[in-house]
Image (cartoon, rainbow, N blue to C red):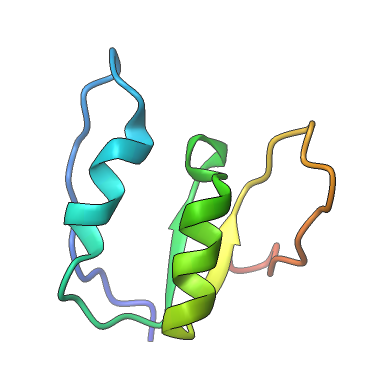
Length: 73
């Protein structure tokens, strides 16, 4: 339905990806909408494992681009 499950501001001076694991732990969701700072293979793998949709803007240097729903993004 696109309802916000959890929201957290992360400090800009650290890698944003280190905050993802605790942010999604124990939360059921259908997908993750995020910018390219979250384009990390382990996050993609976690989403696949949990059956979530991947709606993450991708870095230009991604060797195997992922199909994302640009209308939702």
